[in-house]
Length: 173
Image 1 (spheres, rainbow, N blue to C red):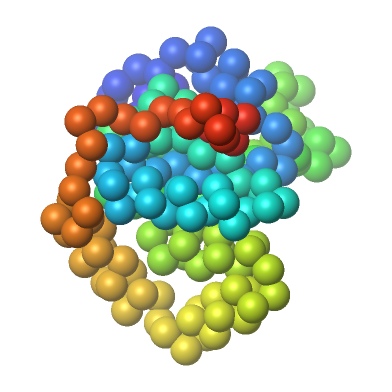
Image 2 (image 1 turned 180 degrees about the vertical axis):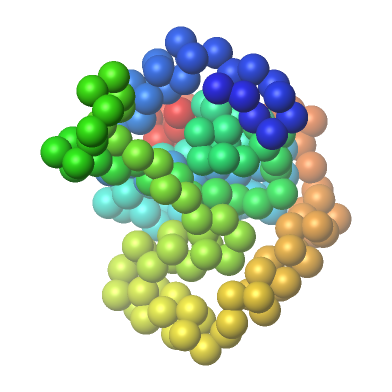
């Protein structure tokens, strides 16, 4: 697999990542050095009591491989991304050489944030759907882009990427 900058992504690593990620997994890719992004992850780790989400920094091997898998540049850290792995209906696959029986979908920018919030319970779902209904996506994404472009100015930047947290090790890829 190659990303948009023709960076070769090793298929063996790609296949092992497919095995690490479970069916119906919800993986949130985030900027691992951004304190604003890490604060959001910290909040989600504490309020996601049903453990619907797993996390990986965009800068990690898994993060870069998932970015390429969903058609993005391996080094794109411009947006938080929700990646969902779903099992395909194999009865519709006509190419017998295709061994993959799953697909990845993704949500980025405001769609990611609202999709994640929607999963956090009925009040959050109502708020998320109201924002989706009453605020056009272009306006939501403009607000998102403004915050994203200034995220290091808001809460700063870490010297190294957050790749795990001992208390929540099972939630990080």
